[in-house]
Amino acid sequence: MATIYREGNLDLLTGKVAVIGYGSQGHAHALNLHDSGVEVEVGLREGSPSRAAAEEAGLRTASVADAVRGAQIVSLLLPDQVQPRVYAEQVAPHLEPGAALLFAHGFNVHYGRIAPPEGHDVIMVAPKGPGHIVRRLFEEGYGTPAIVAVAQDASGGAFDLALAYGAGIGAARAGMIETTFAEETETDLFGEQAVLCGGVTELIRAGFETLVEAGYQPEIAYYECLHELKLIVDLIWEGGLSGMRYSVSDTAEYGDLTRGPRVIDAHVRETMRALLDDIRSGAFAREWIAEMEAGEPNLDRLRREASQQLLEQVGPELRALMRREGAEAPTA
Ligand code: NAD
Ligand code: MG
Image (cartoon, rainbow, N blue to C red; front, side, top):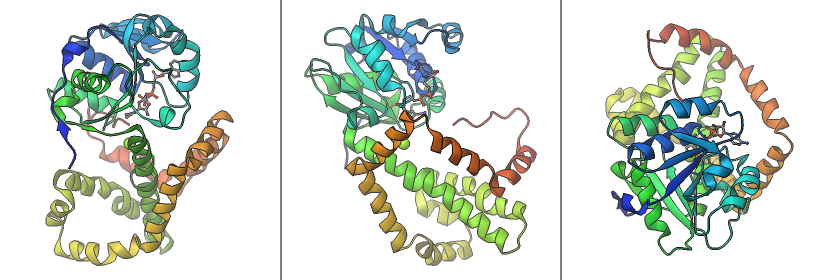
C-alpha cells in the first residue's frame, strides 16, 4: 500500500510562489497558498481577463516574466497545450538559479515537451479534483487529495518542497501520495480515455441509442442512461461498489452482477490494454501533439458532431426542469 503523507512543512516555502495562469487550478492554488500565509504572485499574459478577478481576491499580479523573476517556485498552471511555448518564451529566460518548477499534470515533462535545465527541482502536485473543488473544500476547512512527484531533484529536497506546497494548497488535509511523472501521466490519460470520459460517455450513448432504436421515448432513455448515472456514481463514491449494491434493489444487483461482465467483456478489456499501450509507447501523445500543432481541426469537428447527437438534443430541456432555484452551476 502507498504511504499517505498528511503533512508538509510550510516553512520550506520561504520565497515567492509564482502561480502562472489563473484558471481552474491556478486560482485555487494561488488563493489557498495565499490563505496559508505563502507569498504569492500570479503571472498573467497581457490583457488577461483574469487580472481583475485575481486582484479583487487580494492577490498580487504581474506579467509572466515578472512573476517568474525572484520566485522560489514557479507553478505552471496553464492549459497543457500552451505550456511549452509560454515556458520557452516567458518562463525559462527568467528563472532564478535553483528555482523549482511545479506542474499539476505530468504530460509535458513526461513526453519531453518541456525539459527544464539541470539545477532546478522539477516537481508535481496534482490535486485529484477540479480546481473549483480544490478551492471550495479548502475554504470549508477540508482539502482535496493530491499526488506528488519529483522528476528532477536538484536541491536534494525536492520531495519535501512538493509536500510543503501540497500542504499550502490544503492537500495534506486529505492526504498526499507519492507517484512519478510517468505513473501520473499514463494513469491520468488512461483514466480519462477508458473510464471517466471516453468510457462513460460511450457507455451512456450506447445505452441511450439502444433504447431509442428499440422504440422507447428518448426522454425516458435519457433519464435511465444519463440522469440516474449520477445518483449511482454518488453511491459508489460514498461506499464503493458494494455500498451502491446495498442501496439498489436485489433485481438491479442481480442484473449488475450477471450482465455487467457481458457488457464490459474480454474484448473491452483487450481494447483497454491497447489504449494503455498507445499511451505508454507515446503514440497517443504524438497524435495529440500533432493535432494541437495543427490548430486542433479534428477536435473541433468531433466536438461539433458530438453536440448534434440526439442525446444532446433532449438533455437541455430535461435538465432545465430539474434545476433547483439558486443552485450553483456544475463546475467542470
Ligand atoms: P485552465 O484551462 O483552467 O486555464 C489556465 C489559465 O491559463 C487560464 O486563466 C487562461 O486564461 C490562461 N492562459 C491560456 N493561454 C495562456 C497563454 N498563452 N499565456 C498565459 N496564460 C494563458 O487550466 P487548468 O485546467 O487549470 O489546467 C492547468 C494545469 O492543471 C494543467 O497542467 C492541467 O492538466 C492541470 N490539472 C487541471 C485540473 C483541472 O481541474 N482543470 C486538475 C488536475 C490537473
Ligand atoms: Mg485525471
